[in-house]
Length: 80
Image (cartoon, rainbow, N blue to C red):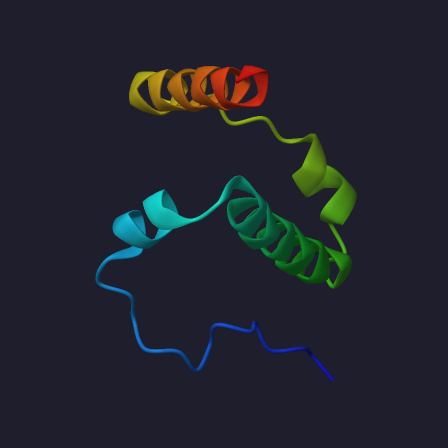
């Protein structure tokens, strides 16, 4: 039996950005861990999981810029 994502029965969030901004780093990490667990569950059911994991899709310039900004913010927060 497939497991259901924990958020499947929740109403759509209109203020996701604000909710994430208000979270502690540990709370955000918990969301990340849950997303990784869901990705693992999906991949584990695919016959082509190894091939999927080998694929590399380049980030858009906008995504790369946002990623680098978030990494820098995280490093500054850890150093503080």
